[in-house]
Image (cartoon, rainbow, N blue to C red; front, side, top):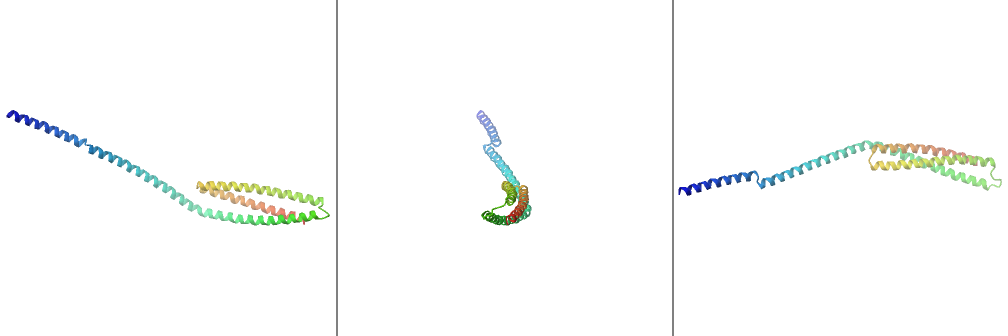
Length: 201
């Protein structure tokens, strides 16, 4: 009986130690803990990712806001330059109408001279030819100016797509300078047309 008791007692002690060792091992390396730590690390990664994304959006918003403020600053300058361009365009249109009218008048006078039985004297023919050469040179210069204007318009369009305000303002300044040169040339052409009209009177 004593042997049986000692055997049972020994078995209980061994089983007790085994169970406590398993329980300790289970609490330290439990599958629940490993799952929980995996979820925690993924959650932490996602949290960091969202934080980085938020910072990126805030930076992008700051850039947009800064650009918006910059555009507000430039708005007045754009309006002022556009107003000058509109006024210059009106001057150009007005001068062109005057030149077209003078051109019609000159043609009528020349046709009247041609239909005259006496014809046109050599001296008058020379004067007309010389003045027509001057007018032709004016027209060639105006053609070059139109090409320069077209280049500026294309550059302005490209700069507008890139939202480069400084380059756009520089384009508008160039357009104004070209318009002013064109107005000078148109005034010169008008003056030369008037001179030709006085020759054929």
